[in-house]
Image (cartoon, rainbow over all chains, first blue to last red; front, side):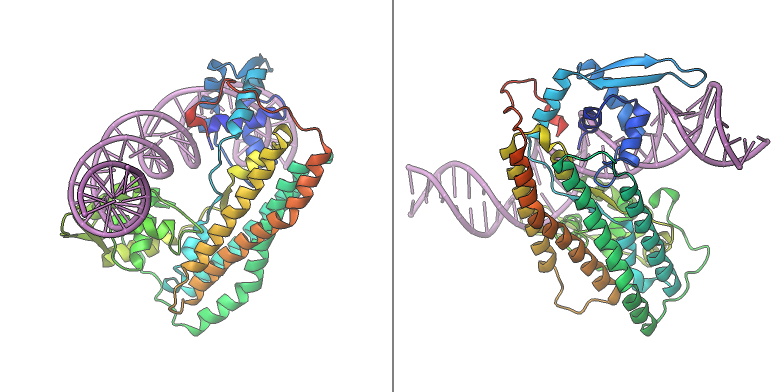
Length: 193
Length: 193
DNA sequence: TCAGTATATGCTGGGTCAATATACATTTGT
DNA sequence: ACAAATGTATATTGACCCAGCATATACTGA
């Protein structure tokens, strides 16, 4: 999903600065289903300005850098909704945790357990955040649909982890513990995580 | 997750060509949890060759381009497992479908329904594929854990969609149908989907 | 004084996607 | 039955996009 589209989507809910758009994707209603970074939001907004799909007015603030508040134009709305008509890509899920876990039989047992535990608290936090960002205002049907989809999926994940953590630790304790990794081995370079 | 790491992970299961590695992420056991494209696999393999974490031998084939079969070296294994020790990023889920759906009250009703239906068959296919790629050989505990995690999550998603499709269509039919989009509006440029 | 919040920008490395090339295998059209 | 089109297996590359980080400023609270 293109950064420009995502920005337009955010602006459909009202005017916002680049910073605020980021927050919408970080904590807001979009957070469970997509993400964009500053590095693409700001260039996207500039391009949208050129295309006249957004307007911008600078709000002077004392001390802090000027806040540039963007609003979507009627043309922008039309283009956005028109763009949504194209067939979307299927959902994609990326899980470094599971990737690592799938090599768990080559890793020290303790590490695997720790990883699962980190994984669990990770999901707990995520779910709390989703619940937390629930509007007090009544959401339109579609928004509720999306919101609850997220909750259902994330809670299943958490449930699964909690339920099967025991299985995993038990089965691992039956297997041979792989040697603790030797220190000062040639490590994978910093960029490689 | 770095392309080099992903390639090493694939090669942990045995030697493979770039093409075959891609297939592992497209259909294979990794498919529910991560992805890499050709455009990053091939450069990654070349770099891994430099670093001597993989070796390559060219398998001549009649007619077709040579197949370069890569194998992981002991150094590569060590580096890979060592790299896994770093704390992984939290899971990320990307759903263009849900993003679009969340603007459903601005879209023609028929489009929304069609979208949900496409979404459903999408998940059906995905789940079938996951089940399909189940090895007949007995998986180690960790691999089963990951495999079943994927199934649990994907099936919850599908269930949710099936169960709430009706709610959605019902509620939408009560609301005003937004005007059918006017043809030849300025469309969002090709790159924008 | 140190950390956190609010705000914007630019760079770099790495990533996706689509085009390109080759050659066999299979299906479809007439 | 033969030609044409599509599909599979394989590798490469270039254009554009994006995430992540560093950087800059200045307030607020600990």
